[in-house]
Image (tube, rainbow over all chains, first blue to last red; front, side):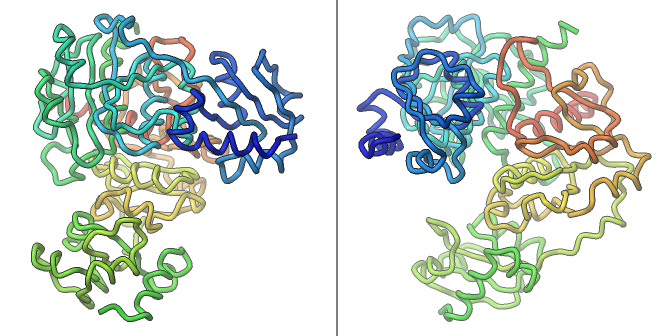
Length: 254
Length: 254
């Protein structure tokens, strides 16, 4: 049975303010919650008897068994599934990351929660462990972002930092970015490490960030030079670039 | 000045039923409408004086000049821009398409309007002129799809057909699809023509369609075999596969 106070508490986590105050976020859905339960501390699990019967639940702060109707009252989804979990927001220590030897992503003002979630999901697919976001990028613990990650949040770490400052302090790392006037990506020697910067949906990469990008890439259209869309969706562009970086390493393993 | 009847008419086009009845769809936004105006017949253009001053408007069925406030009443967007256009839905003749010599996409039950729009936009980037959709795929003239295409609808043609029937009648064309148990995409010889099938967000490709797919592809994760997301967003997966098909041709041009 879910008390009115608990429902109010869960609803307060829809907003960044509430999440910041309590240091937790909400995830919903059987697959998503099962996956997060294996890797993140859960302070409150709200689940139907069906979910509890079919899933092995590790130690959680508090467990409340509910009917599907009760779950509806707390859920942010139009069609809630059988479970909702409140997870502790992990602290991200960017100082301890070995940026030099891995490939990372940097997001400069990505606004759309769906795009951010989709990018986190594809970063996970491509073994990219760290994403650095500008402070004005969508909040990774926004419920819409969490849902779009499909559980990838269990493995990908997202850091909110001042991008120009970070770039000024990491000048030894190759910094890539996509630009409409960049160099054909397929004619470049892509390193196995570095940072790939992706820009805002409408305005692209800010000048203060772009000046640190030494390797400007262009995703070629086909056929070259023919009139086509002026740009790609940012999650799609990120995917194509990440695939190309990883392709080089994967081909060597064949 | 926009009459109440016109506002009612525009609002009726939000639904598939209204669009089917009138044979038209709505597009909004300066860039989008300007682009469509160059390639599609427009039956009604609702624009502010600002838009009309800055854009060359070709012959349209009817032109109504409005204030931004009036535009708000008709618009489907939260923050309308300066123009809204009603365009005639083109008739798609799949019989006349030369399927043999080009690369096309086939979508089996894509539900999310944003995903469909994003796929149309990337098809345009990669010079893919035709997309075949199952009847239960989202409607391409749904306003959310139209907005996500960012004008690519001016060049990409979308056909709604019975997929198994179409595949049974086109057995000479190579048919590709992505599967979690497919073959490493990078180890395959991809043809310059054919059809690439992408499946529903949750359930993938239906069995009735999958049985026609002779070339089952897998987008490799990195590093191979490491635990990661179970799948990619469908627009992202489509992008990575299309990029790989086009990469082969683009590399030869370098």
